[in-house]
View (cartoon, rainbow over the protein chains, first blue to last red):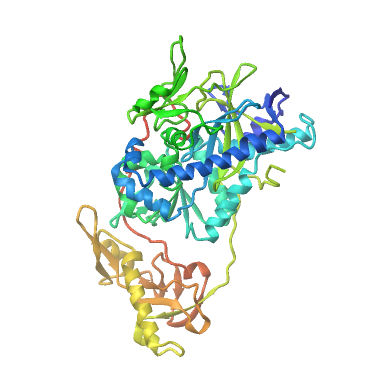
Length: 389
Length: 182
């Protein structure tokens, strides 16, 4: 694993804008950054990222299986009582999941350590699956990188295939509605891209904003044409659905959600202590505890404190011996915290680097890399492409 | 190769692709009631009644719903509406058009891909039967062919009583956010 400085394509901004990838630059700072790329060997990808991702996904299923049958665990995860049966049903009915991203700290040598699982509302998808792929093809053509390079990235193919399967097996029956929150261009862009994938899979789709969803007299959700919603892809966290006004209508609405409700167990930071409790010592896991659990005292040395529901690095606190805690501001934390042993991100030329390992329909199929000047990555962290050679 | 073999240029914004799946038209049968059905060659009374009962149950679920009888009659004509056996969340009445017939698979050709469902006649096109999601079926009873999408169970056209119940839990910050995801 190396960081290689590179020449940029002259026209990449124009290309990005033509494709609708408009947030390539944020407040004059680059978000898409092709002034460098990361190089991996095929062994590193397959042995250190792909295989562990598949294994962790299977461990996660064991956690879900255990959590749904334990009132104690569901309470610890701060999941409202009203949704316990609904989450159980979503698991027993095998409601299909579409995608997720495991975030790893990995330096190319020692085992990748799982930092968290963005199982419910992952973003940075388009830049991973499409824009990074285009970069690779063009960078080879322009001789910026050697011919014959590869990339760990069949995300787009897998997304279209996953939608095709859901279409064929009637997991999506009729129209697929897709929703994001208003005034969140990145989320809307991600959902528009997924809509495009669904269309390529032959599905009939309709985009709308979460705020636009209505409810009819029978408690069914409706779109802006007053048509009933049957299947809803929502880039909107389950824990917010559960506390929203319309949340109580969800269990009786007859709507199939993507991601399904059982993903709320995996996107919860409480997943980390549950994994550690069940699979302590696993090479890809870090010691983690619920913050209010007395065994959290087992955690020696430096650690990170994370709210159960945090997204995009918000409210994460890094506590190192003899140093002021490092904090990211944000709105989360009332719901409780977990603590996790600190495994600092590797530093390449002053940049802190995190690996996002993508799964589509639970199959590992690609990778995106984020860099930050600070040891905690957040929504403004730069996205860099990668190559295998 | 660890990467996608090809990529139809995938846009983040509006789709430029217009795909349409071509499916075979489906054989269906349309009747006003079970008596009419049982007089059709190849249709037995038991199946006719069973399918009509099914359509009546579907009628409650898939018929267009209105919170005022005037709105319903504007679409379906005077005295062509009834009170639905459901209420709005605030306890108000809900109205729906009368079921004017039903559609089922053609028993002579299998017709297994046809969803049995109620049919309606709208005020602006009273000659034709329409499905619950307002797709034209045919003007006459008996066996007929319809596009495959019409033979599917209707997506429910309904009447929204309230919007805006999602979104309130999203943290409101003064700085602009690009994303709530992660």
